[in-house]
Length: 209
Image (cartoon, rainbow, N blue to C red; front, side, top):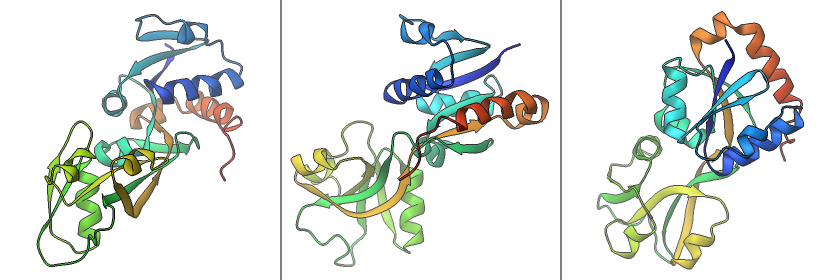
């Protein structure tokens, strides 16, 4: 049975395909996939999924390996091994608020909008602050503009979207990049195959800055 790799769809998928090609893998099926979600890549089977589902598939053992952003890992992850930083998709979790406001001023309980309530909760607990977290699925930048929240916790890459909406970063929370995760049982049962894949992948990872 082929090793099965869960790959996050979208931009990370494209960047990972470039790494696979550098490994010498034939990615024709991945590049010309149409609507198919399970593709053959040499001796591997690649499953395309949303980021949170990559975690689920690896945790439940239906996929041996997953490639997913650290943002999804810290928000959703529990039972797997985090093996490797791919140095792809680099950005940051950050706290942002309306430009020119002092977020930490005053004693009232701050309202924070985020797609990442667990990350947000852990960050403010580490600062000893009691906040009200409002879960937002879409554009979190709207929340401060509509006075729904005092600030947001979100992924920031260039900061352009924040600036265009009159927001600014108050504090960076943690760096994010794509990671390789491995199912715990697979690591015991198929260690040699997984180690071989990780070694080949490690040889083509872009060097960190």
